Length: 95
Image (cartoon, rainbow, N blue to C red; front, top):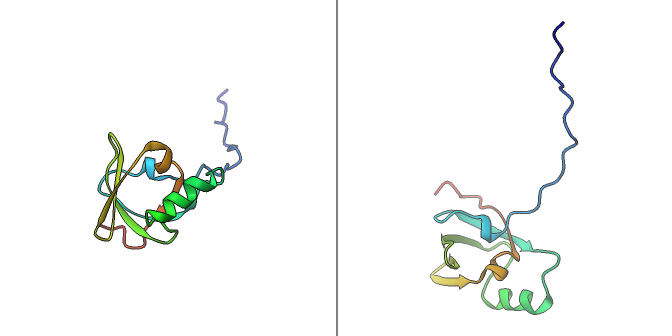
């Protein structure tokens, strides 16, 4: 007697938000916000760099640092900073 495959799915768990660390080089993305556990001084530093929620940027490289381009400015971010920046798909990410 054949058994039917088990079709019950595990409950959908919300995955962790994407961060700049996970964006492939060349991709266009938009800053969604900062990780909840981001220390205040790091958050202030990111804002001072121009990493403002809603801002669109392009990731240029991931190794050895995360290099991003915001308008005409390039920034190189250490892993700890790049991991604090949550991102979402940019509306014109077809590039």
